[in-house]
Image (cartoon, rainbow, N blue to C red; front, top):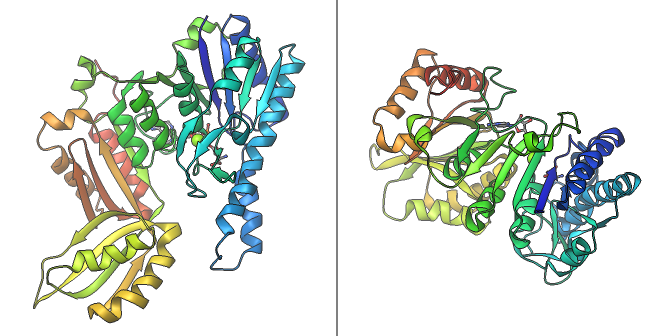
Length: 422
Ligand code: ADP
Ligand code: ASP
Ligand code: MG
């Protein structure tokens, strides 16, 4: 008997029929003798629907208090799906109880819409498990010190599940989704993408942070910090497939590098369409410029990603960086108001139609020429690189959004990701 956490994403919870299927699958695991905790997302489309309603009502620049209400609103999607799942589990003849984040409690900081989990109280859940109940806990949400409901950022149910698995010292956290594992790249963009049987924690962390939405980055961070065995697998297999087979399916995130991984120089390609580029033109090239520009942006709580500064000409330079598209308008306004006048820069221009494409692989550490191969492949496709950023195990380029699919596919092929590994 083991304590197992299952997480089901929005598509997997997308209708009453699918919820019934989830209940049957969970019942199979419970009847095999496991203690079961289940973390569902809202039914697919529900979070978008709720946030869309708020957008209809809110003015362009929402005031203080707006983000608290967004969390109060968006968290209801998971509350509904959790109750429905508990009802479906009961209909399967199991004892089941559902809890919202504040009932458990899943304690977070107060950063509404992107709160971080600080601690999880496991007492109530353990008592239910020991009494033979299946426990359903809402994904995506928690409660801050003041008793306000918070949410963990889009895709945050992954993080809820892994954090709950860590708090309960679960045997494994199984993330059920609409694909059957982690692929070399998003299989919706490259049909030749291959499923990885295992992926190292470090690579998964990079892939998630570079845009692979299959796992929210914070869930991978939690898995690494608390060494939670984490597997991504399909909820679309028949619910009654053999449990042993199911337990070995999908992709396992591993914490040790094995020989096979070392062989793959590039193991995956990630992309991100959520960023926008801002360029401050004609900046006087003197000490403190980066601090002056990016300090103002950071003070407004806007995260900056890729940064480049051009060589100066006649004592002036151009300075470009990317931010999340949601923060783009705010960042441009802020720079125009506060930075442009004091800095004496010539202008601020922006581009929201960009994307970032990245190659990821721990093998890049010991191989030279990987980045240059990436640049060659893109040049052969006639794709202009606007920005470059590298680290030990990844190279990212910012390119025009319209070439994203072409770039992903060309790189996937050039790095032999469509070929089975030895
Ligand atoms: P859920 O609702 O189950 O959390 P998500 O939509 O958040 O599901 O994440 C699953 C999706 O992630 C897949 O449908 C797929 O399109 C996308 N995805 C992006 N990159 C990858 C990848 N490398 N491997 C698998 N899926 C990926
Ligand atoms: N329902 C939330 C979202 O759509 C959380 C999740 O699905 O993980 O982002
Ligand atoms: Mg998700």
